[in-house]
Length: 192
Image 1 (cartoon, rainbow, N blue to C red):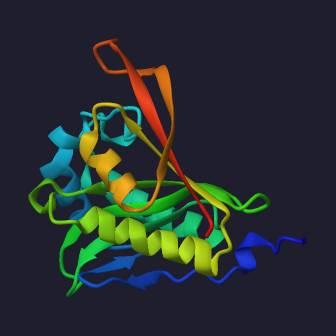
Image 2: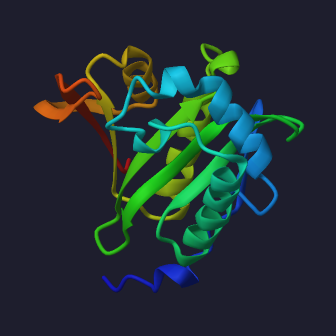
């Protein structure tokens, strides 16, 4: 099977969900992303292996740079990131994306985070479900994976609700900032 040049694959920059919008970051989103990350930083820092970018509080400039880089990587099909936005598009609720896509083999990892003030409302599950639908039905992906710290029960529940199967526990796969070894849970979902 011949795989098309990834840059020529049409990937929507906007995805509609029942209660949310997903949109590729763009120039000018930095201040809103910065505010969402700062409000959630203590929660995000708990998972340094999955979210290494949250180890230090970013500046507005760093957040704006991430938005512009995310858009460039999206265009190049190197990473596919979407902001999770409220239904009216006015509030950044988090982010979700397909990372390290291997277009030849149809695989990618899926990552997500939700603003601390908007957690426990099913937004991550809704966003992950929509991205999985796009990945399998439109992009022809064959396998998606989610990794989370063994103690990140909320993230594990999101994976399970989205139909991912627990495949492995990677023992002592990473260390927290204090040097304590942690395990990682690996979940995967294959194309229907």
